[in-house]
Length: 435
Image (cartoon, rainbow, N blue to C red; front, side, top):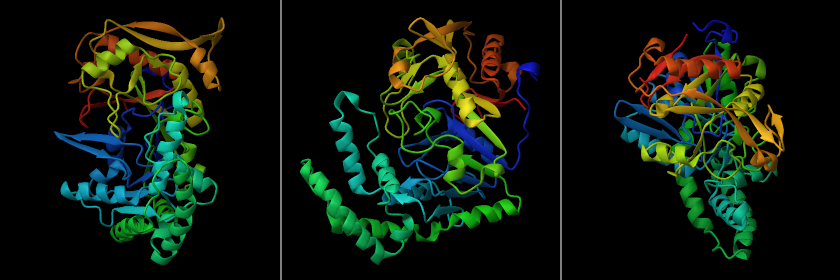
């Protein structure tokens, strides 16, 4: 449709990875929801209940934190992979929520026995460490995600498979709690009750047992029989532990490579990578944000937009940063892009896009590795005329205002990627497909 500024078209092949191209909160939940129609399995491969995917179906709002949003589609199989860390009590609450909505999960949800458990002491340690950082705080959700991954990396974690063996779990819990209660006590935090945790977690284990399995053969058997897979990324590229704005990052691999390590699917079985990006930029928590604009944030918050699905926190807002998007495309190998929240810009006279940075008089085309350098960078903007028209009812490319189309074409050209869809509202029907 758009000619030369598209990169090579990749038709929907068997296995697609969907990744946030910014700091998370890009609207991945809705894009996953739409792509699920063409998938047989939806796989979550990293993160924990520090992430949230929001999907609107008509007037019903669904917020999912651990269970893939593909569960909202009948007959789709969902997998929580080994790379995820989970609070089993929270997961039971999520299952209860789906039950109230009359969404069946039996024989549709499978959870890796190798997924690590978020324990109550992880949450206490998370809050303790965040408070101790003072002005240097990261801005975590205090859900215990970082400390859980720390225990995983230091080979002290407890896995879901351990929880399925009550005697083994009791022994591991006693050992880990002794060590962590000593740390909490030394920092003035009341020690946690062994008996209370044991009872709560074993109760959760009974509910979760039907879903827990070795997901590796399940996934590979599905691939062998030609099933199509969709990998549902949580957070976004710049929260990646290796490629994000370190140290203001999460504790897992949020980029496309994490889809393989977090599920057991080899890289040569991934056939398409889709990047999801907002038509502007947001982030939650601390850290550098070159294009942050308080006026834009006030506008969005006044509209009731840009509050976190997981925490309810107001997101920091700014203009679109194409230096970030190009970086994200390099790291993830995006085949195409899905742009969301275009309607958020409907009322603006002028729309700015950052095309490069200026640092100590020099022009930077790439993101610096150091967060201190990024903090000191000034955005170099290119301006676009606003369309000043409501886009939320647009059903096709031709129904979008000409100036909105010009904006989207420019983004696609700058990113060097094909544009596959545009979202103009929260409902699953408010998405325009361009292929």
